[in-house]
Image (tube, rainbow, N blue to C red; front, side, top):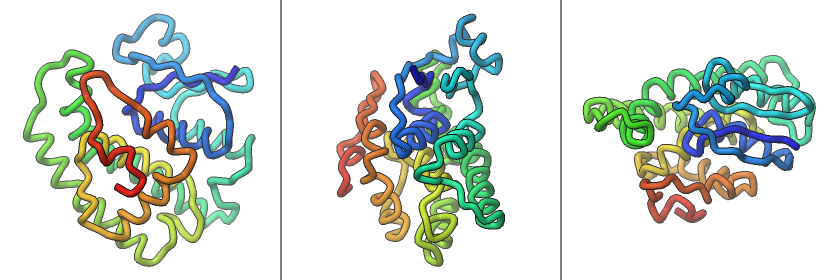
Length: 221
């Protein structure tokens, strides 16, 4: 059995879930309260982070490493180009969203609005939320600039870069913190991703105490 230990509003988990679904790999989802750092979970990943994927007799951690493994072992459909330069661009953008975007936006907004309450760390820091809301404008404009010259974020075909960006934005869309009116081209790009069968399970996610907005699961926004 293929099993994924995950947290519903983790963009890193969502990136792996999208990859698994796009490749039509059936997986048993196990929600993990990673902040409790249970001994059993730490045996699976001493870093105490999700996602953790058990597949092919291996226990794997780190979302990008997992996704690249899946693309090599289950190559259809491919999410990484064969051309080294194109593959570099995908990896660059994956790093952009998992590092810069996550640090400047996702963790500022999502941690304050949701995660703190879930893990019992107190009230949101409004300064962090305001900073994240301000920073996301820059990132949406950057995406718009890319999409003005490309069909997808990294080029002419959908890649892991698109799933990575969509994973982060979907978490923020769950809390209504994405201004989809800022860029028509970004909104159209997200609508294409959101309409894929691989996205259905994400749109069905519910976090207790934090209901999503009506538009979250609406394919037409």
